[in-house]
Amino acid sequence: MLINIHKSALEEVLHFRNQFLHENNFQFICNKCHDYGWADTYLFWANDMQIGYGAVWGTDRREDRDTIFEFFISPPFRKHTHLIFPKFATITKAIYIESQSNDVLLTSMLYEYATNIRAEAILFADHYQTNFDIPGTVFRPRQYDDNSDDSSDFFLEAEGRIVASGGLMLNYNFPYADIYMDVKAPFRQKGYGSVIVQEIKKVAYAAGRVPAARCNISNQISKATLLKAGLKICGFRLKGDLKALQ
Image (cartoon, rainbow, N blue to C red; front, side, top):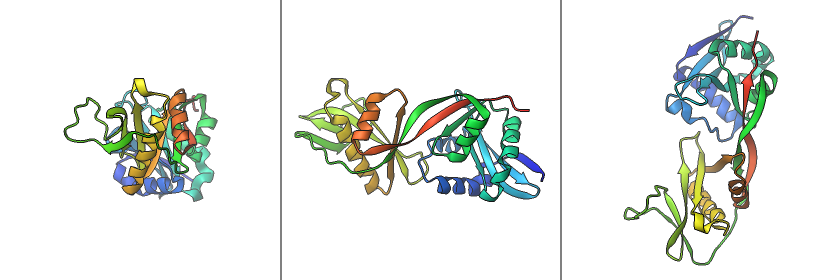
C-alpha cells in the first residue's frame, strides 16, 4: 500500500474533520485555529483513496507550524497508523504533539512518539445542575450604560456592587460553548464564582449550546469552582516533544 500525504486546503479535509468531531463528541479547544488561519491541513491517501487528515499549528508563535494537534484516520485504515503518523510528522517537520486526552487516537500517538509529556490544562464537561442562591445577589447581562472596564457579557452583583463577571466563548465546535469567569479580588472564596458559573450554564443551554470549560493545570481555585458548579473533569490538555523519527 502506497501512503501519500499532501498539504491541502481546509475545504478538502472538512468531511474528515466532521467525522473527527462527531466521533469524539467533545469540545475541541483548538477548533478556532482553522477559523483564524493559524493551522495547515494535510490530506492522507492510501493508493488512490483518501483515508484521513492531520493538522499542525504554532504552539508558541501562531506563524509557526511546529505542532501536530489533529490526526484522524478513517476507522477501516487505522491498522496502518504506524505507517501514516511517522510520515506525517516527518513531512511537517513538527517537533511537538498537543492532544486532548479524550482524543484517543492522537493521545496514543503522543505516548508512542513523544517524550517529556506534560499536562497543561484541565478540561471540563457539564455534569449536573446546581441551585446555589446567595441572598442579595443578582445575575444580569451587561448593559450599554455599564461604567466598567470589564468587557464581560454577564455580571453578578451583590448589594449593588459587581462581584464577578463572565460569559461564553463561541469559537469552538458547535454546540459547545466555553465558560469564562472572574471573581473580583475582594470577593473571592465566598461562593460567587460557582453562582456565576451556574447561571452562565443556564444561558448556554437557553441558546442551544452545551457548556464546557477549562483551566490551567495549576489553578486549583478555578478547578474547585467549576467542580462545585456541577462540571466534571473530562480530560486534560497534553503536550509532548516528538522523538526523532527515522
